[in-house]
Length: 412
Image (cartoon, rainbow, N blue to C red; front, side, top):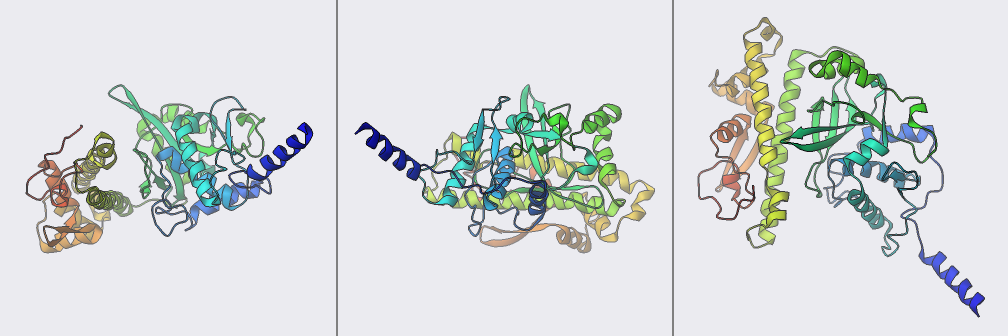
């Protein structure tokens, strides 16, 4: 009887136990290259976790989660194994063979739950230290990522960005998520990352192919290289990214392109702020417009985003003022000159205002009026402390319009 019971139990366990998904083949060098092609393709887009039309709608992420999620999704879609180390020990791993999610019948929902489990188990430190390795700069490709850490007021801040594309000028298109963890549209940055590394294990990295071999030391991988740290030591922080660009470019950048790229980055941040504010307004409506608690406030307030946008505009204006005083201004198109002169109040004509609006504007509904809002509006209103980062404020006040502010608690 015991033997029969054991057989029944074994059969039952075999039937009910499942992987997150079944891998029917092993990774090959061609798959590694195809992962890069997939990242470059339209299948990997900023709305992949946020559009209701995306099968991966609702996946919550911070910066490391978003990068790892991309690797999980590619592995799942191609029936490939997935392995992620959670410590320096080879047996501390999370894999697609996990039976933790057997209670979820829908395979796609299992994958989403798997991604959320990874997000709770590992972050940027684990991605940098146990699951990636530095590569030679001229071999960077889509699917590689940049990961860094810096200190503010004694506290370490970390961030990671996926390389979506490498432009002919050597500049990068970077996709990233941020904190707090939630389902969101990915941020887009064109150029170089904002923060420079200091040493290993940070920098431009590539996923370790654990799925192929867990025993080979990363230093023996063919594309492993410490070149970027040598360049950092030789060139210093001020010249690190220019050296990276030199390694990647196939043609020279122009001053006009450079300025347009900076404006596009600022415009992307402005548009992202609009979406965040509108999403918060809908969320508040569902809650009956009650005051948000500390966790909700942390998720929906925008002080860091707002300050970052202000600082970006300041950097652009500082650079433009220097260009205006130099002979290089002849290399800048009339459109850019007018727009940036309007931004620094050197031009007040309708033509200049129109030039700035053409480069970047958003349309807002403020107190029943449709308003065209540009970078100058944000800059002026933020400098006069009228832009509100408080999620309980009305949309009008979030964009600097006059009116009563919320009486709800401010947590920071």
